[in-house]
Length: 490
Ligand SMILES: Nc1ncnc2c1ncn2[C@@H]1O[C@H](COP(=O)(O)OP(=O)(O)O)[C@@H](O)[C@H]1O
Ligand SMILES: [Mg+2]
Image 1 (cartoon, protein in one colour):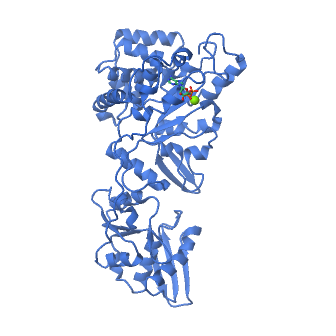
Image 2 (tube, helix red, strand yellow):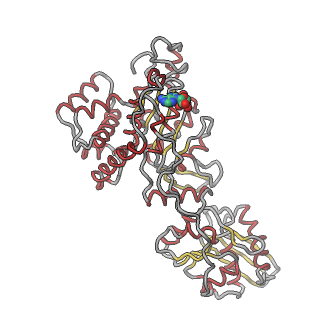
Image 3 (cartoon, rainbow, N blue to C red):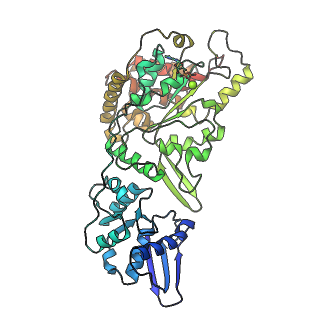
Protein backbone atom coordinates (compact mmCIF):
# COMPACT_ATOMS: atom_id res chain seq x y z
CA UNK A 1 0.00 0.00 0.00
CA UNK A 2 1.50 3.34 -1.03
CA UNK A 3 0.56 6.77 0.28
CA UNK A 4 1.29 9.79 -1.93
CA UNK A 5 0.74 13.33 -0.82
CA UNK A 6 0.66 16.39 -3.00
CA UNK A 7 0.71 19.87 -1.49
CA UNK A 8 0.11 22.87 -3.75
CA UNK A 9 -1.16 26.41 -3.76
CA UNK A 10 -4.90 26.77 -3.54
CA UNK A 11 -7.69 27.01 -1.03
CA UNK A 12 -6.77 25.14 2.16
CA UNK A 13 -8.21 21.63 1.88
CA UNK A 14 -7.21 18.08 2.75
CA UNK A 15 -8.60 15.37 0.51
CA UNK A 16 -7.91 11.64 0.55
CA UNK A 17 -8.62 9.60 -2.59
CA UNK A 18 -8.39 5.88 -3.30
CA UNK A 19 -11.43 4.02 -1.92
CA UNK A 20 -11.01 5.29 1.58
CA UNK A 21 -13.56 4.14 4.13
CA UNK A 22 -14.92 6.19 7.00
CA UNK A 23 -11.93 5.47 9.22
CA UNK A 24 -9.52 6.76 6.62
CA UNK A 25 -11.55 9.93 6.18
CA UNK A 26 -11.40 10.44 9.92
CA UNK A 27 -7.67 10.08 9.52
CA UNK A 28 -7.66 13.64 8.16
CA UNK A 29 -8.65 14.96 11.56
CA UNK A 30 -6.21 12.77 13.47
CA UNK A 31 -3.31 13.54 11.12
CA UNK A 32 -3.97 17.28 11.29
CA UNK A 33 -4.14 17.31 15.10
CA UNK A 34 -1.14 15.01 15.55
CA UNK A 35 1.00 17.14 13.22
CA UNK A 36 0.09 20.37 14.99
CA UNK A 37 0.41 18.89 18.48
CA UNK A 38 3.84 17.51 17.64
CA UNK A 39 5.10 21.00 16.82
CA UNK A 40 5.08 20.73 13.04
CA UNK A 41 3.27 22.94 10.63
CA UNK A 42 0.09 21.85 8.91
CA UNK A 43 0.23 23.53 5.51
CA UNK A 44 -2.67 25.88 4.80
CA UNK A 45 -2.73 24.81 1.19
CA UNK A 46 -4.45 22.33 -1.06
CA UNK A 47 -3.45 18.82 0.02
CA UNK A 48 -4.38 15.68 -1.87
CA UNK A 49 -3.41 12.30 -0.48
CA UNK A 50 -3.76 9.26 -2.69
CA UNK A 51 -3.80 5.70 -1.40
CA UNK A 52 -2.69 3.12 -3.94
CA UNK A 53 -3.67 0.67 -5.29
CA UNK A 54 -6.99 2.45 -5.60
CA UNK A 55 -9.17 -0.62 -6.01
CA UNK A 56 -8.19 -2.27 -2.74
CA UNK A 57 -10.39 -1.27 0.19
CA UNK A 58 -8.39 0.21 3.03
CA UNK A 59 -9.68 0.16 6.48
CA UNK A 60 -8.82 1.21 9.91
CA UNK A 61 -6.48 3.89 10.99
CA UNK A 62 -3.23 2.07 10.33
CA UNK A 63 -2.30 4.45 7.53
CA UNK A 64 -2.23 7.54 9.78
CA UNK A 65 1.47 7.47 10.42
CA UNK A 66 2.33 7.05 6.73
CA UNK A 67 -0.05 9.87 5.81
CA UNK A 68 1.44 12.22 8.36
CA UNK A 69 5.03 11.52 7.34
CA UNK A 70 4.23 11.81 3.63
CA UNK A 71 2.56 15.14 4.33
CA UNK A 72 5.57 16.39 6.29
CA UNK A 73 7.82 15.36 3.41
CA UNK A 74 5.57 16.97 0.79
CA UNK A 75 5.59 20.22 2.73
CA UNK A 76 9.34 20.30 3.13
CA UNK A 77 9.52 19.49 6.83
CA UNK A 78 11.28 16.19 6.26
CA UNK A 79 13.69 15.33 3.41
CA UNK A 80 11.62 13.41 0.91
CA UNK A 81 14.21 10.74 0.05
CA UNK A 82 14.29 9.73 3.71
CA UNK A 83 11.00 7.92 3.20
CA UNK A 84 12.53 5.47 0.72
CA UNK A 85 12.75 1.90 1.93
CA UNK A 86 10.53 2.53 4.93
CA UNK A 87 7.15 1.13 5.87
CA UNK A 88 5.15 3.16 8.39
CA UNK A 89 2.35 1.42 10.25
CA UNK A 90 0.24 2.90 13.00
CA UNK A 91 -2.70 4.99 14.07
CA UNK A 92 -2.12 8.50 15.41
CA UNK A 93 -3.71 9.86 18.56
CA UNK A 94 -4.59 13.54 18.48
CA UNK A 95 -1.59 14.33 20.70
CA UNK A 96 0.82 12.65 18.28
CA UNK A 97 1.18 9.30 20.00
CA UNK A 98 1.54 6.27 17.70
CA UNK A 99 -0.98 3.57 18.52
CA UNK A 100 -0.68 -0.13 17.71
CA UNK A 101 -2.84 -1.65 14.99
CA UNK A 102 -4.17 -5.06 14.15
CA UNK A 103 -2.26 -7.21 11.68
CA UNK A 104 1.25 -6.14 12.64
CA UNK A 105 2.80 -9.54 11.94
CA UNK A 106 1.19 -9.73 8.49
CA UNK A 107 2.51 -6.25 7.70
CA UNK A 108 5.96 -7.17 8.98
CA UNK A 109 6.02 -10.28 6.77
CA UNK A 110 4.88 -8.25 3.76
CA UNK A 111 7.59 -5.64 4.45
CA UNK A 112 10.23 -8.33 4.44
CA UNK A 113 8.83 -9.96 1.30
CA UNK A 114 8.76 -6.64 -0.52
CA UNK A 115 12.44 -6.23 0.33
CA UNK A 116 11.86 -2.92 2.10
CA UNK A 117 14.43 -2.12 4.70
CA UNK A 118 12.69 -0.94 7.77
CA UNK A 119 9.36 -0.98 9.53
CA UNK A 120 8.46 1.91 11.83
CA UNK A 121 5.56 1.16 14.14
CA UNK A 122 4.11 1.59 17.59
CA UNK A 123 6.40 0.32 20.33
CA UNK A 124 3.71 -1.91 21.75
CA UNK A 125 3.82 -4.12 18.64
CA UNK A 126 7.55 -4.17 18.03
CA UNK A 127 8.02 -7.61 19.58
CA UNK A 128 5.43 -9.03 17.27
CA UNK A 129 7.12 -7.53 14.20
CA UNK A 130 10.50 -8.85 15.37
CA UNK A 131 9.25 -12.41 14.92
CA UNK A 132 10.07 -11.86 11.25
CA UNK A 133 13.72 -12.65 10.85
CA UNK A 134 15.96 -10.21 9.05
CA UNK A 135 13.62 -7.25 9.37
CA UNK A 136 14.77 -3.94 10.85
CA UNK A 137 12.04 -2.92 13.29
CA UNK A 138 12.06 0.61 14.67
CA UNK A 139 9.61 1.33 17.50
CA UNK A 140 8.27 4.87 17.64
CA UNK A 141 6.05 6.04 20.49
CA UNK A 142 5.23 9.36 18.85
CA UNK A 143 5.05 10.96 15.44
CA UNK A 144 8.14 12.98 16.37
CA UNK A 145 10.07 9.76 17.11
CA UNK A 146 9.09 8.39 13.69
CA UNK A 147 10.39 11.56 12.06
CA UNK A 148 13.61 11.29 14.08
CA UNK A 149 14.07 7.69 12.90
CA UNK A 150 13.42 8.71 9.29
CA UNK A 151 16.07 11.39 9.62
CA UNK A 152 18.63 8.82 10.74
CA UNK A 153 18.16 9.11 14.50
CA UNK A 154 17.64 6.44 17.10
CA UNK A 155 14.44 4.49 17.46
CA UNK A 156 12.62 4.50 20.79
CA UNK A 157 13.54 1.84 23.31
CA UNK A 158 11.73 -1.46 23.05
CA UNK A 159 9.08 -1.83 25.71
CA UNK A 160 9.42 -4.65 28.20
CA UNK A 161 8.14 -7.72 26.47
CA UNK A 162 5.34 -10.01 27.40
CA UNK A 163 6.95 -13.43 27.61
CA UNK A 164 6.21 -15.90 24.82
CA UNK A 165 3.85 -18.62 25.83
CA UNK A 166 5.67 -21.89 25.32
CA UNK A 167 4.36 -25.39 24.91
CA UNK A 168 0.94 -26.70 25.75
CA UNK A 169 -0.62 -24.78 28.55
CA UNK A 170 -1.08 -26.30 31.95
CA UNK A 171 -4.69 -25.25 31.67
CA UNK A 172 -5.74 -28.30 29.63
CA UNK A 173 -7.51 -30.86 31.82
CA UNK A 174 -5.96 -34.32 31.84
CA UNK A 175 -7.12 -37.37 29.94
CA UNK A 176 -6.80 -39.47 33.07
CA UNK A 177 -9.97 -37.80 34.43
CA UNK A 178 -11.91 -39.88 31.93
CA UNK A 179 -13.01 -43.22 33.38
CA UNK A 180 -13.77 -46.24 31.23
CA UNK A 181 -14.49 -45.45 27.56
CA UNK A 182 -11.26 -47.14 26.49
CA UNK A 183 -12.36 -47.39 22.88
CA UNK A 184 -13.25 -43.75 22.60
CA UNK A 185 -10.04 -42.63 24.29
CA UNK A 186 -8.05 -44.78 21.92
CA UNK A 187 -9.93 -43.30 18.96
CA UNK A 188 -9.11 -39.81 20.23
CA UNK A 189 -5.42 -40.68 20.50
CA UNK A 190 -5.46 -42.00 16.93
CA UNK A 191 -7.23 -38.86 15.74
CA UNK A 192 -4.65 -36.66 17.46
CA UNK A 193 -1.77 -38.73 16.11
CA UNK A 194 -2.83 -38.50 12.46
CA UNK A 195 -4.64 -35.15 12.62
CA UNK A 196 -7.86 -36.92 11.65
CA UNK A 197 -11.26 -35.34 11.89
CA UNK A 198 -13.18 -37.27 14.49
CA UNK A 199 -16.78 -37.69 15.55
CA UNK A 200 -17.59 -38.53 19.16
CA UNK A 201 -20.91 -40.29 19.38
CA UNK A 202 -22.72 -41.67 22.40
CA UNK A 203 -25.66 -41.25 24.77
CA UNK A 204 -25.91 -38.11 26.94
CA UNK A 205 -23.62 -37.89 29.93
CA UNK A 206 -21.08 -40.45 28.74
CA UNK A 207 -18.22 -37.98 28.52
CA UNK A 208 -18.20 -36.75 24.90
CA UNK A 209 -17.70 -33.12 25.82
CA UNK A 210 -15.30 -34.06 28.57
CA UNK A 211 -13.16 -36.10 26.19
CA UNK A 212 -13.11 -33.43 23.49
CA UNK A 213 -11.97 -30.81 26.00
CA UNK A 214 -8.86 -32.89 26.64
CA UNK A 215 -7.62 -33.11 23.06
CA UNK A 216 -5.26 -30.16 23.54
CA UNK A 217 -3.46 -32.00 26.31
CA UNK A 218 -2.32 -34.75 23.95
CA UNK A 219 -1.37 -32.71 20.90
CA UNK A 220 2.28 -31.77 20.47
CA UNK A 221 3.28 -28.11 20.97
CA UNK A 222 3.15 -25.80 17.96
CA UNK A 223 6.24 -25.72 15.80
CA UNK A 224 7.74 -22.28 15.30
CA UNK A 225 6.28 -22.02 11.79
CA UNK A 226 2.85 -22.99 13.08
CA UNK A 227 3.15 -20.56 15.98
CA UNK A 228 3.96 -17.69 13.63
CA UNK A 229 0.92 -18.53 11.48
CA UNK A 230 -1.30 -18.58 14.56
CA UNK A 231 0.17 -15.32 15.85
CA UNK A 232 -0.40 -13.66 12.49
CA UNK A 233 -4.08 -14.67 12.55
CA UNK A 234 -4.57 -13.56 16.15
CA UNK A 235 -2.92 -10.29 15.29
CA UNK A 236 -5.29 -9.67 12.39
CA UNK A 237 -8.18 -10.59 14.69
CA UNK A 238 -6.86 -8.08 17.21
CA UNK A 239 -6.36 -10.53 20.04
CA UNK A 240 -2.64 -10.84 20.52
CA UNK A 241 -0.76 -9.62 23.55
CA UNK A 242 2.55 -9.26 21.72
CA UNK A 243 5.10 -11.97 21.17
CA UNK A 244 4.56 -15.46 19.90
CA UNK A 245 1.42 -17.44 20.63
CA UNK A 246 2.44 -20.80 22.09
CA UNK A 247 -0.96 -22.33 22.60
CA UNK A 248 -2.53 -24.63 20.03
CA UNK A 249 -5.84 -23.07 19.04
CA UNK A 250 -9.04 -24.56 20.42
CA UNK A 251 -12.30 -23.11 19.14
CA UNK A 252 -15.65 -24.37 20.31
CA UNK A 253 -18.37 -22.17 18.80
CA UNK A 254 -21.93 -22.60 20.03
CA UNK A 255 -24.36 -24.35 17.67
CA UNK A 256 -26.22 -21.06 17.12
CA UNK A 257 -23.23 -19.69 15.16
CA UNK A 258 -23.92 -18.25 11.70
CA UNK A 259 -22.08 -19.11 8.50
CA UNK A 260 -20.34 -15.73 8.59
CA UNK A 261 -19.27 -16.36 12.17
CA UNK A 262 -17.83 -19.70 11.23
CA UNK A 263 -16.15 -18.77 7.96
CA UNK A 264 -15.57 -15.04 8.42
CA UNK A 265 -16.53 -11.91 6.56
CA UNK A 266 -19.38 -10.78 8.78
CA UNK A 267 -17.64 -7.43 8.81
CA UNK A 268 -14.96 -6.56 6.35
CA UNK A 269 -12.08 -7.64 8.49
CA UNK A 270 -13.71 -10.24 10.71
CA UNK A 271 -12.01 -13.59 10.98
CA UNK A 272 -14.08 -16.77 11.19
CA UNK A 273 -13.80 -19.61 13.67
CA UNK A 274 -12.29 -21.93 11.05
CA UNK A 275 -9.41 -19.48 10.58
CA UNK A 276 -8.97 -18.93 14.30
CA UNK A 277 -8.76 -22.74 14.59
CA UNK A 278 -5.91 -22.93 12.04
CA UNK A 279 -3.21 -25.35 13.29
CA UNK A 280 -5.51 -26.34 16.12
CA UNK A 281 -8.87 -27.87 16.85
CA UNK A 282 -12.39 -26.83 15.90
CA UNK A 283 -14.87 -28.50 18.24
CA UNK A 284 -18.53 -28.63 17.26
CA UNK A 285 -20.49 -29.93 20.24
CA UNK A 286 -24.07 -31.11 19.63
CA UNK A 287 -23.32 -31.31 15.94
CA UNK A 288 -26.89 -32.04 14.86
CA UNK A 289 -28.03 -28.70 16.34
CA UNK A 290 -25.94 -26.63 13.91
CA UNK A 291 -27.85 -25.15 10.97
CA UNK A 292 -27.41 -27.18 7.83
CA UNK A 293 -25.95 -24.30 5.75
CA UNK A 294 -23.37 -23.70 8.48
CA UNK A 295 -22.23 -27.30 8.29
CA UNK A 296 -22.22 -27.15 4.48
CA UNK A 297 -19.94 -24.13 4.67
CA UNK A 298 -17.31 -26.29 6.34
CA UNK A 299 -16.80 -28.16 3.11
CA UNK A 300 -14.31 -25.75 1.55
CA UNK A 301 -11.99 -25.35 4.54
CA UNK A 302 -12.10 -29.08 5.25
CA UNK A 303 -11.21 -29.78 1.64
CA UNK A 304 -8.65 -27.05 0.95
CA UNK A 305 -7.34 -26.06 4.37
CA UNK A 306 -8.19 -22.43 3.62
CA UNK A 307 -11.07 -20.06 3.04
CA UNK A 308 -11.59 -17.19 0.65
CA UNK A 309 -13.52 -14.25 2.03
CA UNK A 310 -15.01 -12.25 -0.80
CA UNK A 311 -16.05 -8.66 -0.14
CA UNK A 312 -17.06 -6.47 -3.02
CA UNK A 313 -14.45 -7.06 -5.72
CA UNK A 314 -11.78 -8.08 -3.30
CA UNK A 315 -11.06 -11.51 -1.97
CA UNK A 316 -8.74 -12.47 0.85
CA UNK A 317 -7.49 -15.98 1.45
CA UNK A 318 -6.92 -17.15 4.99
CA UNK A 319 -5.40 -20.44 6.10
CA UNK A 320 -7.90 -22.72 7.84
CA UNK A 321 -6.29 -26.11 8.35
CA UNK A 322 -7.68 -27.50 11.57
CA UNK A 323 -8.63 -30.79 13.11
CA UNK A 324 -12.40 -31.12 13.34
CA UNK A 325 -13.80 -32.70 16.47
CA UNK A 326 -17.54 -33.09 16.63
CA UNK A 327 -19.83 -34.62 19.21
CA UNK A 328 -23.35 -35.87 18.84
CA UNK A 329 -25.93 -38.09 20.38
CA UNK A 330 -26.54 -41.11 18.15
CA UNK A 331 -30.21 -40.10 17.74
CA UNK A 332 -32.62 -37.37 18.95
CA UNK A 333 -33.46 -39.11 22.23
CA UNK A 334 -29.83 -40.03 22.69
CA UNK A 335 -30.19 -43.71 23.39
CA UNK A 336 -30.04 -45.44 20.03
CA UNK A 337 -28.00 -48.58 20.48
CA UNK A 338 -28.61 -48.78 24.23
CA UNK A 339 -30.74 -51.91 24.49
CA UNK A 340 -34.38 -51.12 23.74
CA UNK A 341 -34.17 -47.71 25.32
CA UNK A 342 -34.36 -45.58 22.17
CA UNK A 343 -37.81 -44.02 21.73
CA UNK A 344 -37.19 -42.36 18.35
CA UNK A 345 -39.33 -43.18 15.34
CA UNK A 346 -37.72 -44.34 12.10
CA UNK A 347 -38.52 -40.92 10.64
CA UNK A 348 -36.74 -39.12 13.47
CA UNK A 349 -33.73 -41.37 13.09
CA UNK A 350 -33.65 -40.77 9.36
CA UNK A 351 -33.85 -36.99 9.88
CA UNK A 352 -30.99 -37.12 12.37
CA UNK A 353 -28.87 -39.09 9.92
CA UNK A 354 -29.68 -36.73 7.07
CA UNK A 355 -28.66 -33.67 9.07
CA UNK A 356 -25.20 -35.00 9.59
CA UNK A 357 -24.58 -36.94 6.45
CA UNK A 358 -23.21 -35.60 3.21
CA UNK A 359 -20.42 -33.10 3.09
CA UNK A 360 -19.41 -33.40 6.69
CA UNK A 361 -19.35 -37.13 7.33
CA UNK A 362 -17.42 -37.48 4.12
CA UNK A 363 -14.59 -35.57 5.75
CA UNK A 364 -14.63 -37.35 9.07
CA UNK A 365 -12.07 -40.13 9.16
CA UNK A 366 -12.96 -41.71 12.41
CA UNK A 367 -15.52 -42.32 15.04
CA UNK A 368 -15.03 -42.43 18.78
CA UNK A 369 -18.02 -44.29 20.12
CA UNK A 370 -18.79 -43.84 23.79
CA UNK A 371 -20.67 -46.59 25.56
CA UNK A 372 -23.53 -46.08 27.89
CA UNK A 373 -22.21 -48.73 30.28
CA UNK A 374 -18.61 -47.63 30.38
CA UNK A 375 -19.76 -44.12 31.21
CA UNK A 376 -21.69 -45.44 34.18
CA UNK A 377 -18.72 -47.32 35.44
CA UNK A 378 -16.91 -44.30 36.83
CA UNK A 379 -14.92 -46.48 39.18
CA UNK A 380 -13.01 -48.29 36.45
CA UNK A 381 -9.35 -47.57 35.89
CA UNK A 382 -8.10 -44.55 33.99
CA UNK A 383 -7.01 -45.78 30.55
CA UNK A 384 -4.15 -43.39 29.90
CA UNK A 385 -2.86 -40.04 31.11
CA UNK A 386 -2.24 -37.05 28.86
CA UNK A 387 1.55 -37.07 29.22
CA UNK A 388 1.84 -40.65 27.98
CA UNK A 389 -0.72 -40.08 25.23
CA UNK A 390 1.15 -37.02 24.04
CA UNK A 391 4.35 -39.04 23.79
CA UNK A 392 2.63 -41.63 21.62
CA UNK A 393 1.10 -38.93 19.46
CA UNK A 394 4.39 -37.07 19.09
CA UNK A 395 6.29 -40.23 18.11
CA UNK A 396 3.64 -41.17 15.58
CA UNK A 397 3.72 -37.67 14.10
CA UNK A 398 7.48 -37.80 13.72
CA UNK A 399 7.18 -41.04 11.78
CA UNK A 400 4.57 -39.53 9.48
CA UNK A 401 6.54 -36.37 8.86
CA UNK A 402 9.63 -38.41 7.94
CA UNK A 403 7.68 -40.63 5.55
CA UNK A 404 5.71 -37.79 3.95
CA UNK A 405 8.62 -35.37 3.66
CA UNK A 406 8.54 -35.38 -0.14
CA UNK A 407 4.78 -35.28 -0.43
CA UNK A 408 4.21 -31.76 0.86
CA UNK A 409 2.17 -32.82 3.87
CA UNK A 410 3.08 -33.77 7.42
CA UNK A 411 0.04 -35.66 8.66
CA UNK A 412 -1.64 -38.84 7.49
CA UNK A 413 -5.00 -37.05 7.52
CA UNK A 414 -3.77 -34.83 4.69
CA UNK A 415 -2.75 -37.62 2.31
CA UNK A 416 -4.73 -37.37 -0.92
CA UNK A 417 -5.41 -40.28 -3.27
CA UNK A 418 -2.06 -39.96 -5.04
CA UNK A 419 -0.07 -39.84 -1.80
CA UNK A 420 -2.06 -42.78 -0.45
CA UNK A 421 -1.15 -44.82 -3.50
CA UNK A 422 2.51 -44.03 -3.02
CA UNK A 423 2.77 -44.41 0.72
CA UNK A 424 0.22 -46.97 1.86
CA UNK A 425 0.43 -50.50 0.54
CA UNK A 426 -1.46 -53.42 1.97
CA UNK A 427 -0.55 -57.06 2.10
CA UNK A 428 -2.82 -59.66 0.55
CA UNK A 429 -4.88 -60.12 3.68
CA UNK A 430 -5.43 -56.40 3.92
CA UNK A 431 -6.55 -56.16 0.30
CA UNK A 432 -8.96 -59.03 0.83
CA UNK A 433 -10.35 -57.35 3.92
CA UNK A 434 -11.01 -54.10 2.04
CA UNK A 435 -12.61 -56.00 -0.83
CA UNK A 436 -14.93 -57.77 1.49
CA UNK A 437 -15.93 -54.56 3.31
CA UNK A 438 -16.62 -53.03 -0.09
CA UNK A 439 -18.72 -55.97 -1.22
CA UNK A 440 -20.80 -55.83 1.92
CA UNK A 441 -21.59 -52.22 1.02
CA UNK A 442 -19.72 -50.90 4.05
CA UNK A 443 -17.19 -48.85 2.12
CA UNK A 444 -17.44 -46.29 -0.66
CA UNK A 445 -14.39 -45.18 -2.65
CA UNK A 446 -13.98 -42.17 -0.37
CA UNK A 447 -14.58 -44.40 2.61
CA UNK A 448 -11.71 -46.56 1.46
CA UNK A 449 -9.36 -43.58 1.47
CA UNK A 450 -10.47 -42.61 4.95
CA UNK A 451 -9.88 -46.12 6.21
CA UNK A 452 -6.41 -46.26 4.65
CA UNK A 453 -5.40 -42.96 6.25
CA UNK A 454 -6.53 -44.08 9.68
CA UNK A 455 -4.93 -47.51 9.23
CA UNK A 456 -1.64 -45.79 8.43
CA UNK A 457 -1.89 -43.78 11.66
CA UNK A 458 -2.66 -46.87 13.71
CA UNK A 459 0.42 -48.52 12.19
CA UNK A 460 2.44 -45.40 13.10
CA UNK A 461 1.22 -45.60 16.68
CA UNK A 462 2.36 -49.23 16.67
CA UNK A 463 5.73 -48.13 15.25
CA UNK A 464 5.11 -50.36 12.28
CA UNK A 465 6.55 -49.53 8.86
CA UNK A 466 3.86 -51.58 7.13
CA UNK A 467 0.10 -51.40 7.45
CA UNK A 468 -0.92 -54.81 8.68
CA UNK A 469 -4.30 -56.45 8.36
CA UNK A 470 -5.10 -55.80 12.00
CA UNK A 471 -4.32 -52.07 11.67
CA UNK A 472 -6.74 -52.06 8.79
CA UNK A 473 -9.34 -54.00 10.77
CA UNK A 474 -9.23 -51.42 13.57
CA UNK A 475 -9.55 -48.60 11.05
CA UNK A 476 -12.61 -50.21 9.47
CA UNK A 477 -14.21 -50.59 12.89
CA UNK A 478 -13.56 -46.89 13.59
CA UNK A 479 -15.13 -45.58 10.37
CA UNK A 480 -16.54 -42.11 11.00
CA UNK A 481 -19.80 -42.71 9.20
CA UNK A 482 -20.63 -45.77 11.30
CA UNK A 483 -21.76 -43.65 14.22
CA UNK A 484 -25.14 -42.59 13.04
CA UNK A 485 -26.64 -45.96 12.38
CA UNK A 486 -29.76 -45.44 14.42
CA UNK A 487 -31.57 -48.75 14.85
CA UNK A 488 -30.35 -50.21 11.60
CA UNK A 489 -26.84 -50.66 10.37
CA UNK A 490 -25.74 -47.83 8.08
N1 LIG B 1 -16.30 -41.40 31.25
C1 LIG B 1 -16.41 -40.49 32.22
N2 LIG B 1 -15.45 -40.39 33.17
C2 LIG B 1 -15.54 -39.47 34.15
N3 LIG B 1 -16.56 -38.61 34.28
C3 LIG B 1 -17.56 -38.65 33.37
C4 LIG B 1 -17.53 -39.58 32.30
N4 LIG B 1 -18.64 -39.38 31.55
C5 LIG B 1 -19.32 -38.38 32.13
N5 LIG B 1 -18.68 -37.93 33.23
C6 LIG B 1 -19.15 -36.85 34.11
O1 LIG B 1 -20.37 -36.39 33.60
C7 LIG B 1 -20.29 -35.03 33.21
C8 LIG B 1 -21.04 -34.83 31.90
O2 LIG B 1 -20.31 -35.43 30.87
P1 LIG B 1 -20.25 -34.80 29.41
O3 LIG B 1 -18.89 -34.90 28.91
O4 LIG B 1 -20.88 -33.46 29.41
O5 LIG B 1 -21.22 -35.81 28.65
P2 LIG B 1 -21.79 -35.72 27.19
O6 LIG B 1 -21.11 -34.62 26.49
O7 LIG B 1 -21.51 -37.05 26.58
O8 LIG B 1 -23.26 -35.50 27.33
C9 LIG B 1 -18.83 -34.75 33.11
O9 LIG B 1 -18.53 -33.40 33.40
C10 LIG B 1 -18.21 -35.67 34.11
O10 LIG B 1 -18.26 -35.09 35.39
MG1 LIG C 1 -21.91 -32.90 25.80
